[in-house]
Image (cartoon, rainbow, N blue to C red; front, side, top):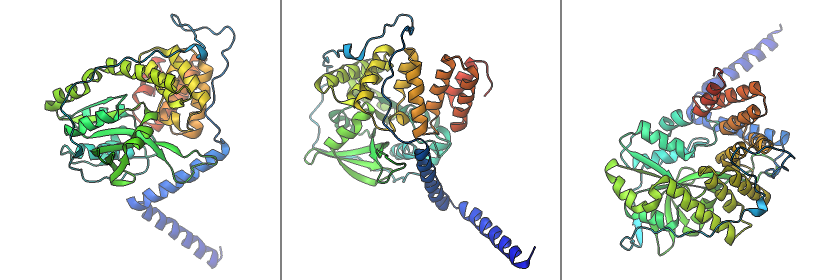
Length: 411
């Protein structure tokens, strides 16, 4: 080999070594991984073009419905009039509330859930950071979603001196009432990317926001936003609009001795069953007042799913899909997977999980339900392979472990 070729090889080896050394620096690693993720997502979007969420498939002739359930066409779903749930009486709320804000936590890539929970826990004296949380509930940075259930799990098991609950069907008055009593509120809201991740990207995504104050005069909430920064000012109207796609879910953290106070504020919604029934009533009413609201129909389906009325839930999801849903909707919410599986509409389940995995290849939830769809189709080995992929995407994923145990397969 000539001397100049050896010199080029040594130089390339030196650059590679330098690159490896630089990559060990967390700040460099974060920036590089973010750019690599964008490149991979864009390439995936070229391979699997981002069309709309698929609409419901025709029901095959002779398809058998699960025992005890009868298929109901979408057109016959007639939401009942909502009932009014009494709310606890309380003293007039102050016009402004501002809780002491925690030390700010700027989120790492795909880490708004752990970062937002970090700031919430710091309000009660917790000393950790987002990586203490993510290594438990989101051990892989590629995982793009953390569910409210996972954040509650972390608090109960790793900050056990605190209590945590989540409920749905929140509203502006409830947020204000909780803040006035000294309780910060975490909500899941709409987030919009500035730049596309793939061709024809609708830029819609999900995000968590910690709300720590309000001002009735300006109708502004103050939120600690792990992406945009501390003390973000958000109007009441914007919160209502951005919160709705997620069934108005909210997360509360509090001290054990404060539980009776939280119960009093939530009233009937403290009981999870009552909370879901109230949410069902309200989302039924929303589909009547605006039958072209896809999110109202989606939330209606989600509440029906929670109450195990799967056939009606599937019909409601059909309607939401026909009206049009964001491309990433099934990255964050999985009620349609459950409803279609439980109502024996496996072709719809497979179509939705396939679409979800094209948009989010690392989604362990979509892998899990795609596996159950394969299992229902008689492809046990394909199901096992998919459940093992889900475990690879989310180490320790209990639902995937349970699925493998169900069929007698090893992880």
